[in-house]
Amino acid sequence: MFFTYEQPDFDINDPKEILRVLEEAYHNGCENCRAGKVADYIPELAKADPDDFGLCVRSMSGETASFGETEKRFSIQSISKVINLAAALKFLGFRETFSHVMMEPSGDAFNSILKLDMTSDLPFNPMINAGAIQVMSMLSNIMGFDELLEFARAFCMDEGIVLNEAVYRSEAETGDRNRAIVYLLQSKGVLQGDPAVTLDLYFKMCSLNVNAKTLANMGLMIANKGQNPFTGEHIIHPGYMRTIQSLMFTCGLYDESGEYGVRVGIPSKSGVGGGIAAAVSGRWGIGTYGPALNKKGNSCGGIAALEHLSHLLQLNVFD
Ligand code: GLU
Image (cartoon, rainbow, N blue to C red; front, side, top):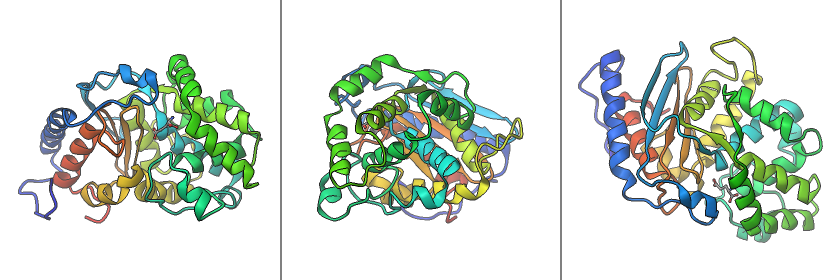
């Protein structure tokens, strides 16, 4: 852990040094996988190999540095919440989206129901399950899964994204907490769509198959303010990136977002499938895959690698 601030004693813009640091970060990630366990509350996720680890970094000009398991597909899980939010901002706008979900970190686990019932009518933010389900209820009135999938492919610059049917079935069979959330929102009169349709879309978006490179692409899209740097196509308005990155920074790693902000300090989103997508504004997209998770549900390897590279290359937004 690097809790102290030391100036690196090498040129952080030298491509050779950058590659050296990325490789070190990858090895650091591999070593730290041992500390975690794969998620098993969705039975299909328990099949992942806890020793898998991959790191992919992509730049605006298309340079790619890949180490380890960067091609293996796994389910995106909560990282889809960023895509859902981006779709809501694009197709519904800022005002409508945030009329139905707040922008506050909850400090609770991703699937917590407690504060939703006790202290507020609207879900705290779009990065936790309650908020993402609420966003999905709004989207369910204007688009179906096929359109959302098309948007996900454009946003992540990956035409290879498909639904992982086995994970989807496993989620739908075991998603009782999410069913509780959707009906709690309905009972409060705040849900914006049909509960069953909403939940089905939510489960499907969590079950998209991605790899570390897809997540690096997603980070790159965000780092490049919603424009595909390779084709020039604008996928979402640049003005929305401040909102997306702020929410990733404050709420993207569940109830570990504060510590992650201190240790890594790059807007990121994690998922219990083992992925982390990170956006280094104006510069890079970073994707990691390491299904061994810590107690908060975040990838042990991913956090270790990101902390290493952020510290040594001074990528914390406050550096
Ligand atoms: N599909 C998972 C759930 O709703 C997503 C959890 C996550 O990645 O945080 O429980």
